[in-house]
Image (tube, rainbow, N blue to C red; front, top):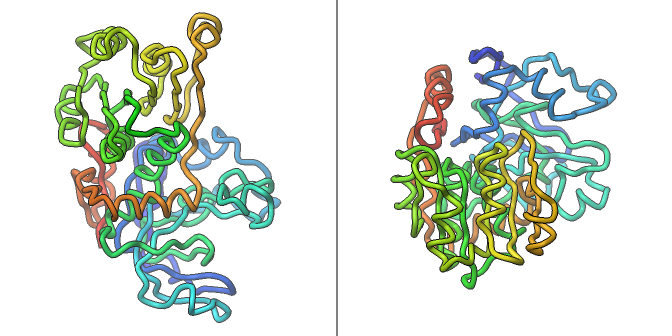
Length: 356
């Protein structure tokens, strides 16, 4: 089968791999859609080994993982079950089922694994598309425990979005415990930020969106953003306070990364405001008294989502008719991987997906 491997220095290679065969407790998925996530750009630009070290993965050799071996990229999979291990209960999954893949695996026994937060596994999580073969391929082998049924109302591309970017946005909204009583400011209107706006709007939340790209600001209006602010021309915090009668929003989310939007997200909230930091990498500096303690604000870090949260996200989309497919601006064939990632690297458009 074919598989896309990140080489670093903005290069990818389509390599040939043996077709996977499921072992006990495993399934092989015929990939129908594999999303391109912003975090994949780190691998595209710098190569897997450097990013793996930067992310703090440890003891890989002890776990039988060679960080220098070619690894198929992509961690937003959806498709159909093509094969099952001999011991898999057919009542849970059967060949032909439409599925999404929770892109982590762990020991399955620690508290984090048992509660669906496998990425926090005590023994160290395996992340598909990072230290194990991912979904930019014809087939993908995973534990059956990582599978989730894809609702019929959600397309394969939509399932791919839920498998990371859109699911991450939903997970952050859950961390904020948001409801229709709230107002939400989203900083960074890339795929995750737009998903957050789209989902929050479907919950009845008034959403304010901020970005420094005029194109993204304009596009956000179609995703339920009630007020879109171009942060390259206006002071976002001042504008948000004007829109909220001088109070600030009750909730904010940073999907941009960088110290400036993170601090703006904090200062855009009212007293008792809640802020979710979603974008990975970089640092954050705030005045402890002025920005946090004196305003009784709460900051949470939100790292993707739980397996149960992923299921809830897919069913929320299905039940509320959310047009999650609208997040995709570019659809590619697998043999167009080099062109696809060059276009994605410009970060000027929306989200891309390999559709099979």
